[in-house]
Amino acid sequence: SVKRTGEQVRVAFVAPQDRAGLQLDLAEKRLVELSELSARSLTKEEKQEQSTKLTQEADESIAIAQKELLRLTKETPEKAVQVATQIKERATRSQEQAEKVASANVLLRLDETKSAALAVIVKEKEAAKVSDQEVTAHLEEAISELEERLARLESVHAAGFQGDNVQEAQKAQETLEDARASLVRNDFTIALVGITRTRDIILAGERSVATSGDAATDGLQ
Image 1 (cartoon, rainbow, N blue to C red):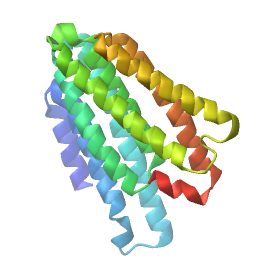
Image 2 (image 1 turned 120 degrees about the vertical axis):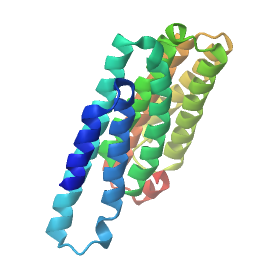
Image 3 (image 1 turned 90 degrees about the vertical axis):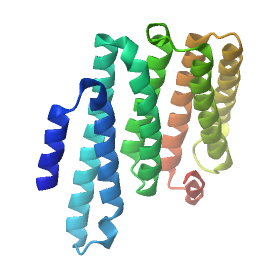
């Protein structure tokens, strides 16, 4: 409780442009604590209670980070892109931690946060005077990440892309190819739309795999 109080004091006095990043730092701390639960001398019920609490706190911190980024975008868009870039980096780091504790809800929230940050970078590039090369790099990184996730899904013999859903995998791949082609034309808005559509397809596949109970889903880890 003392640690939580100290964190709240930090949140209250941090500069507006640092609030989103601080919230993601707090979320990562909760995920680290979650990974350390197994080594603590607690009963099964106590561990379950702590696990639920830590996951909820991490999820809430990430949600607040999203809201702070959107607020900053409305108030000072010229600063929002720099913050969005930092948010992307922190969210990626937290995703790695969340994967270790298999926190699906937190992973989804982090994915949403990265998507929101990417949208800010594209939409506010003029206000922030960000070069086309920088925006291209961010979008290319997003496309590459989605290609890796799509490849993992296609390699898993589970509910993700079986039967009729094979068409969804093909659609995702084609959409990513179109998004990459848009980058060549510096048509960043079209590329962002393609990335967003592909992410939705992949998320649906990942949810199907997660709920299928197929042993082969270990390939997603």
